Image 1 (cartoon, helix red, strand yellow):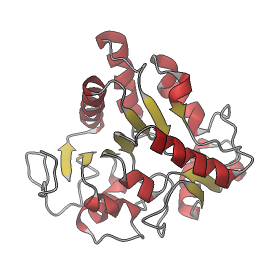
Image 2 (cartoon, rainbow, N blue to C red):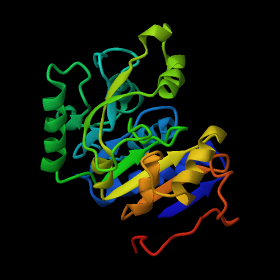
Image 3 (cartoon, rainbow, N blue to C red):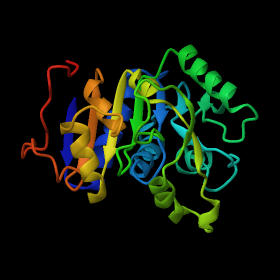
Length: 258
């Protein structure tokens, strides 16, 4: 596991963008998993800039999003589909037919989740999966207690997650209580995982992810078992780590890809 600790959000976003740009340049037909939320916004701004000023080509990519709220149509301004189009896809030359986002209005949720898993398999798996982390250690919408071998499915959101998300909705009553999400097992099959974290309230989750036991109560702790997990975090998110070095790279165990 490679852990890079950067000074602040700007530096974290710059470094994350370098990783993604390098992946796309090395393998233009990569399959990339995208995340939503405030953390990857800076990364997406830099990818748009690289497309416009450095010719970064998105046309051969296949994309899969981690999750989506159940009951929100893609056009809803709080849907994750809307987030992705507004913050990235509308501004780059991605092929719409190669974009995959779970559909929160699917008639048959279980069949839709099985279809999503099949599409990932047919694409040859995910080359690089971008991840955020919740203050409670969740990844995607795999809340504490999620099965560590889980696949794409419907999940009930914890009251903490619903509360955290309420700030995005005009009416707190409208905050969805269910989401479709890739499972922990699905995420673990990605060739490389790029996990981003900033702000102080993520520090306890980052400490448990890196230094705590592997447990379903902290789904992100599974990163310790991933063949190549790359964490790019800022100083505030790293503030509770015991084993860090001042030059900004934490321990890199033997499992790191050469």
